[in-house]
Image (cartoon, rainbow, N blue to C red; front, side, top):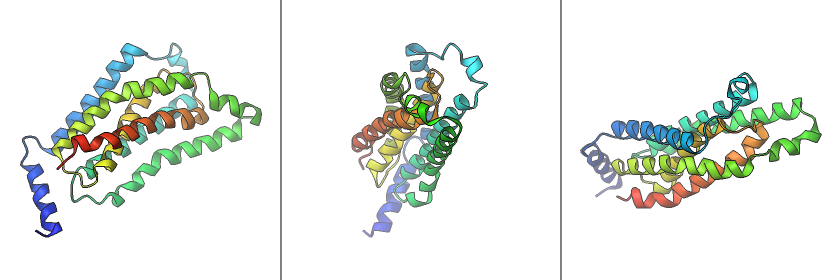
Length: 212
């Protein structure tokens, strides 16, 4: 059988499964957000000064970055769940969050004195960040990997990495409501490390969920 015919057959087989991919992804996304919210509220909860923090640009900017990451990664994950997918068409979406963060870093360096840069980068919650973003994100990652069973990704490791990146974006969005370190320098360092851990875990685990 020719490669193109095999891909078409696999795609048709996924459409014949008990649940459509659209429903699988919609359900997985809703469950991932709900699960992350539950874990966040149980383990952490929002910061005590969230009302006043919400009036600052730095605090709101964190959500802009993390939501952009979650949305763009989820879009690419859905593309990669199909065997005929061409990831190159969706990859540019992933540049949105890093571009926003880079702009935020530049703005932070411009408006703050060099003597404060190190303190802003290190912050006061680095260990909390590295602990709780993965803790909040592990459930969403599992749900997104399970959703891959309804697809037939030709590159399961990459699809798994996108599941981890999506879960990391979701978890970081909730964690940002608790974190009192609002500097883009802190976000670029510690949020990135925590999200990368989920991304690597997703890539390493995907073959267990996405075999075809």
